[in-house]
Image (cartoon, rainbow, N blue to C red; front, side, top):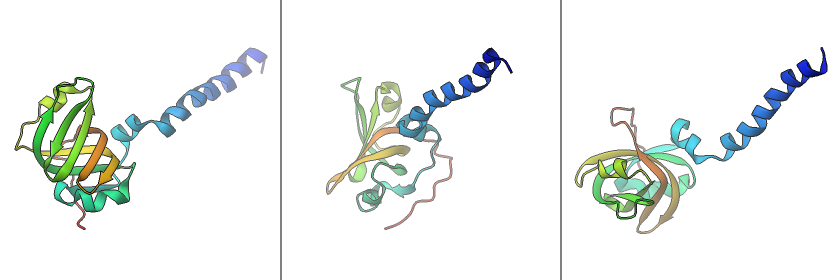
Length: 136
């Protein structure tokens, strides 16, 4: 094997691995898109169950109580029982939900306090996808 062939054979996979490893290990986007939820629960149970899932992906079902897209860089969808979902710059996605509508969403639990939980980032999920909520 000559030097050029060796560089192609061994150099390319190492370079690819060097680029992809940080992306796959620290990126919440990958977790949001492909990661399985650590838990699924109803919005009414979120304050009790979410502390055990801090910084993990969860699926939540609840009724939309408000949508705030006044800051296009920080669009927010609020569910009953204190669940706040940060949709980031996805204004159209946030605006597609109407107050009173039942929403299924996935998100990373960023914060939990006695008045509610924050999912950041968050995004709507297919309501037909399997949803088996745990109970407190």
